Image (tube, rainbow, N blue to C red; front, top):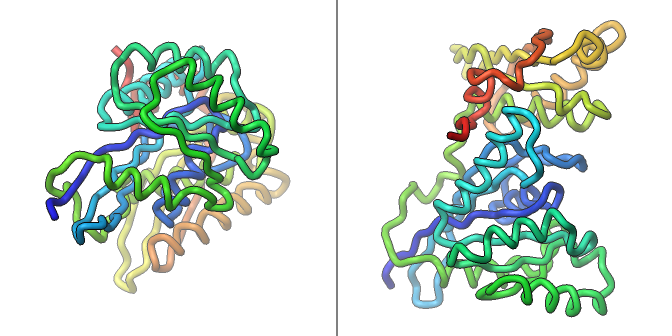
Length: 302
């Protein structure tokens, strides 16, 4: 009945469903999600307790990482470095593959880097609800020929198919050791960063083209009120004048809609009333600034 505890990195190409998987496994909105690639920028930790057959319990520390892509900006390099660091620091890595997309050159590059490292590596095929069953076994065979995966799982992060089997296997696989976090904690993500991320999620969901990728969000002030509510002032930095106009919208309609939806999500997660105020500022080249990169929870690669 010895307790178990371990870090599990969720690694993969952009849009494989890593954040959706983390949220589904933990049962909480910890990592923002959108249909667009490269939504996640920094590592997000989800903490999950799982009972063991012998009566003990395992604490699974699930690390959602940014999708791995070819970096062009200083921000991009920090994002990709965060993904690889998450895998290097983990006891076990899940390579999440979009079963609908299959094997791409980007996925092949990721596997080629993972394969020689000798770390514990599991293959998880996601989005199986979108793929005819006859395609899954050939895809699995092709992938397992590329690296020595300890185990293979087929899941759907959206429907939940296969996730209980995956969780039970993870609970048995993480090392014996004391739990590192209180059992009622869900994440180590600071509330200030969570607020900024939920605003950024709405930017992804409510704007298009390059605008979401050209914006960053920072929580400037967090004021606790006597009535138990909280006032949060958030700044959205954009790279161009045109992006600022799009985010604000006609008569301020777009920024109001972004703030309204983000406030609803925050109030639900914090379980109290939230007063959220957004300010949009133009700041050319923010994605090359070390201070902006550190503000969103990333470390600059050495």
